[in-house]
Image 1: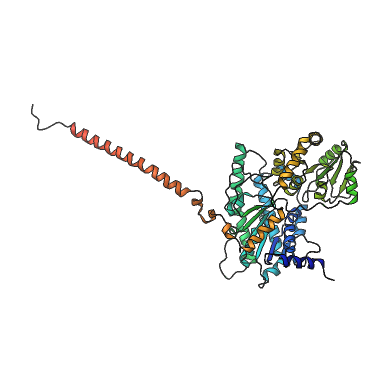
Image 2: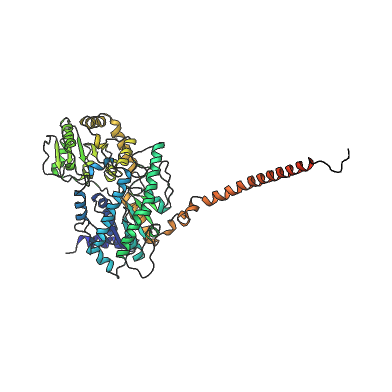
Length: 524
């Protein structure tokens, strides 16, 4: 019997205007939320007839026949890595400690991927060929060397939206007066202290990346790649990236000046809502006062919260008329109130699409924030690390939510925040308005992503989209040579006038001395 996948592919291939390409996708970071954001794009490319090979730590069940998986060992590594960390303690970690921790985690996952026998087999296969490299933009820079190995252009996907260093290698201007670093905890108009902190974060990030992180990845490249010729540096390859796809959109983010090679696809992972399992459907439908959805995402587990925080949530939920749907990672929840339903896994987007869901209590991860905005749900954001602080501050500044600090959470604060959103329709109305403008686009996020990826394929890397800024030396980019010339032109007349004045004074002094001498020829 002919597989339905084969029939679908046949129809797509016959109708496609773009020749099928061989695509290598490197998304080895094991974080589930990262995978959820990128995998649908790979699936869509395969549906359009491209031959897609995905190097991943997350296995896709029943893939298309032209969707191949190279599974690396990162899932096991990441799970054991996470067991040794108290992630809720990250909330007040200093930036200069938190960012290197992220760098190290990403580096170790890159190293584990390279050491996997499956990826080693690909590296040793000299007959393999790819027309395009698609990789996640998450501190795994050694993977850029695949672009040199296969002489293929690169499309990078940033699951965390805009990073300041994207502007550095794409030639897009950085305006630090209003463009916040992704780890900055302020939103809206940046005050003086915010701008000073933003400058510090950005400079620390850019210099640390060049002087600390990239050299480690260079050593990883030397260990695993062999080239007959002198290879380019990772930084050189990064500056040749053809396209960066950002998981954000200007309607909900800081408006930035961007070069054509930076394209926003925020919401690309969101699919048409599916029917809920019957038990969930009944639980939400039958709540006459509405439902509050509580989830701390895929990397933070509610079960790992300190007991005093857990008790605080339980006591708060007992007071509510609303039902609470809680992503809880254990079989049982001691002290579970009668209005609370727990589950280890919940279909988040399908739940948020339900009109009876009134509030989303979230950690503020970018995917969760985007999903809440897409479906017009107000949020209570409880950030812990990374960009969660900025995302929840952004939601609060846009008027669709309240930001609470995990370390200072109290029963009163949570209850008052819930009542504030339930009793004040402004939050819900603003969330719906924001949803309308977020969805209002000439193409869907998926159509936009696929169009520009295929654009890069059609135009063999589309290097003509690159900013001329990347061809300049650093002193030319900052116009320091021009400033020096202008300074010289302004200073030269001043110096000449000063010299002339000094010369005239000297002549006057000499003349004065000469005129003041007695005339020896004069008679009495």
